[in-house]
Image (cartoon, rainbow, N blue to C red; front, side, top):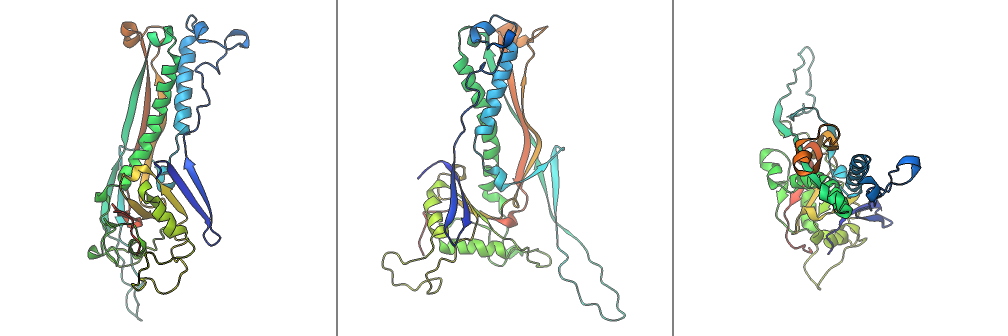
Length: 355
């Protein structure tokens, strides 16, 4: 079992062609805070030179910002493949879910056309939150050659920003309260879209039919949901690969019980989805989720990652004046929420089973 995040793209299910990518952190391009900087006459400025010249504040700012952004871009994330990304300029976005019109009724001769009425099924508010952190660099870090510490802290700042977006999306995915659809409320023909059953052929078929029979509550019109992505915790990875990628199904343990899915050996689940995401953020157990990509969860971006530095020129700010501290602030501003859980089926899971 691996706790690495993986994306498995199924290119040709019949030929068994797939692309499995392990998402690892990319190395920081600017390994030294001042490698990219130049002083007078084009020569590189060392820490010793910079610490006694007026160039240092500029070099420090550029170095920290560069490393933080490099690390932010180097962190592998999957939320872009899961979410529908929308720009936002409000404190919160208010979404409405309308009922469908259903089917056109018959209009007899010399009778008026009936007037359709659109009702609102439900409203949903997704709030945008401002997230941020301040990194302080002391004069001692500068004077006593603690550039490695500065570099590590700058990298941690970028890593924290990237991880915040990723974790925010997976928190929405793994919150069972976000899944409220059921056949008893007229949402589908099968049942609830959240269960606690183990990953198996039977469970996957239940998830598949639950999503494919999702419909409008008022008119009963089917939505045509087409699940194409499966996201799972690392402990379910091997079971998912066996069921979704194997060309044939076979008996196990010498069982003499009649097969659930007929007498053939061709695997009908092969090619069901085109993307498998394995992420430890799904949980430490056996959680798994079947969904249609970019339909269930929305990511509202107000403003991308921003890194600011307190001014150290002219009149010094209070932190530098009293404590010899220059501070850097990272800020990200976004919101994420479950917009339409009719496109997702979530199981908190148990150990995978064979049936």
